Length: 511
Image 1 (cartoon, one colour):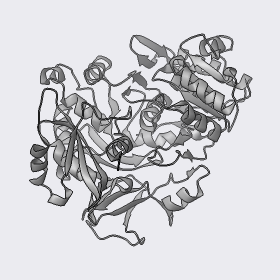
Image 2: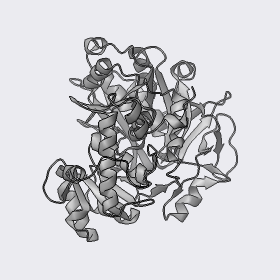
Image 3: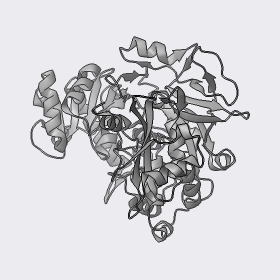
């Protein structure tokens, strides 16, 4: 598939397909003409307060049209968006605003209390918050748009790119911003490769299932708007609603995480089967290891061949694998994307043998980023032109990559390495288990002991001994949990990643 760069961007689609839906959410829709007009009004409002090329604008927003309006308004000005998670507290927000040197923050009205704490900490006046959803405190987002013209901003760029300053999450220390040089005159062309890789075009209908402050939901939505497709936005994920929306809008593709798959599989079988999912061409998934039993089952639920997994990080994407390949290579995350190269290195930087676990390094055309003001982290992440996100894995004889675990999650138990993802995959096969997180907790004898935190399926009962015995059928005893704790629900980020550092802190307390 070849896309014409001259036929990209909101202004082009507003001229050529003015009545086509650009965005849907609930019963609301914006056509490309309406969407581009609102983006232009917002861009002009930003220009009026001095935002221009190279400036940063914070975004603390729930899923909604405003996210894409702000992303595209910033792109038209050559400015940079700083996504701020709506679960963050005042000091965390303050750090990101100060570190990014943002000019202002566009925030949801129900987040005002934490935003106010952040503003107090860095000495910002209320006027630097543009409030979405209520005309109280700060400046009203809608009033600011209403005061502007919907003509293209003066000196603006094509827009449609993805110029975002992402802050990586971590279990220790403060997050670091990922800076990538983007030329606003050609930044939209960077997304062409993604569209061509997955076959997205103007006939696509994309369902956004995850929080837009995360890279994949936001960037995949933006790619579709760039090529003139329709984007359907879920305010929050609900398994039954996701299937209903796919059927209603005849969605052609979506991005999900393994937790979404688990929630879909927990639906009554009649609920899963009553929706027509035949329009789907791609169900992409990433962000966390998918347990083998979950993936085998979800492949059967969706139309044949639509599940495709890719491995990557906020910094870049690395590999991909189709459903057909995965059934031959269960547990693999595939082979490198075109133009990419994978190496597995040991602690001394030497190449590992086939099947030997080491640190995953990737060489990519998109390794032009650096961690902001983090020289030590940059030195640790880059080696001879290759980058590592800190994941451990191995290559098989056919060049397929397998993820063992995060290096930071590795449990050293009595001198032996235990990979939590391996233990989690085994426990997830138990019919009573809905979800599991395996962590290491301090132990006087072993250094770290293996602890499994289990979320059972609704109405099920199980004992620790039962689950430990189940694990011992398939795992060496040293890998198996020495303790099992049961919880009603595991703590997770909105995109599905378990907040393991919270579990480690909780179950290590008092040691």
